[in-house]
Length: 120
Image (cartoon, rainbow, N blue to C red; front, side, top):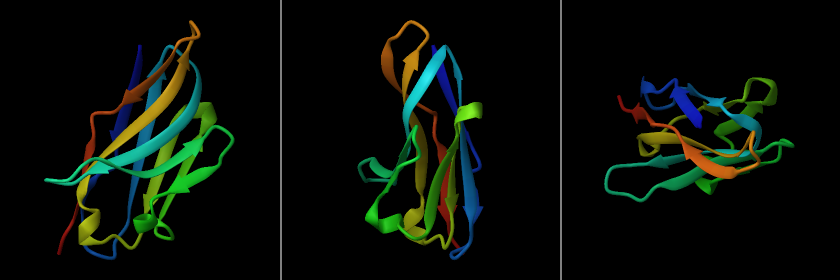
């Protein structure tokens, strides 16, 4: 089994910064893709950013230039640096990963989510 644990959410004022972390553990052989999604009240879950094992990244248009996704492959950990935060960034942020386990099985896993609230 594979577990993803997020940390780093909280309350921040508009224009502020937060850094989210996602640590993967368990029966991991390799992690192919890692990403962050978010879900605001009354809205569908949306992709925020993703990063593949080679380091290539993809961002939603709404966060380009403000958010930076990165990963430490040796630690099976992913980060999301969020700068210039806006009230519309308020949401529950979910970590997810496509993982090949030690038995060669591929699966997609999700974290429990961490709340980010941007408000004055």
